[in-house]
Length: 212
Image (cartoon, rainbow, N blue to C red; front, side, top):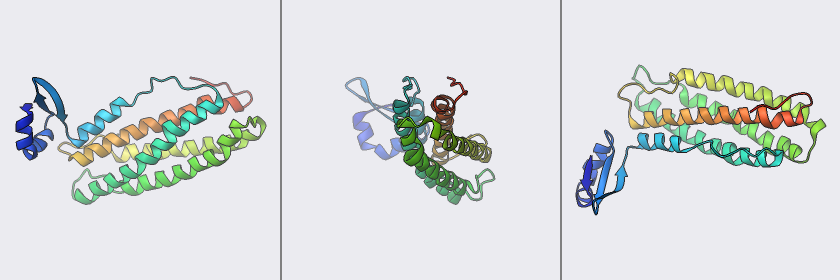
């Protein structure tokens, strides 16, 4: 749908409602100046824009810095917003047969487990690895690997609860945005664990080769 800038200004509320169904292109000087999209579609576009094209640094110190900014900081932003949306969906749609009952509580459990795990890495393991402590790192790396396995199990349950993050037909924008966010969180967590288990940790474990 295309509308003039003047029309969009005068009938903004109407075009906001139309944007729930399809993008609204606002024209100015015979070109598209702005596109109004729904919150759910915006979340989907944000997910698509996050790419893994940039090469991951290979030195331990640089790889750790990459993990902290690309994954730890991102997870800390993702989970509170997912919890907020899950609470809303469960409350508003509590009578819906496909409502993911208990989703907010499960996301809270994931958040608590991951915050504790990331704190261990940031305060104990990562400083040790940056300092070159190879012999001393084997045991704490083993603990982190076990916790990664637990993260994977929690993620499996999360996807089972949400039918692989597939919203039901006619789902509201919040529900769709929630599931788009869960998909992105899942992809990020899998990439995060893979990077640590298969590229960072093997550099400090004798006899264990790193893989891509």
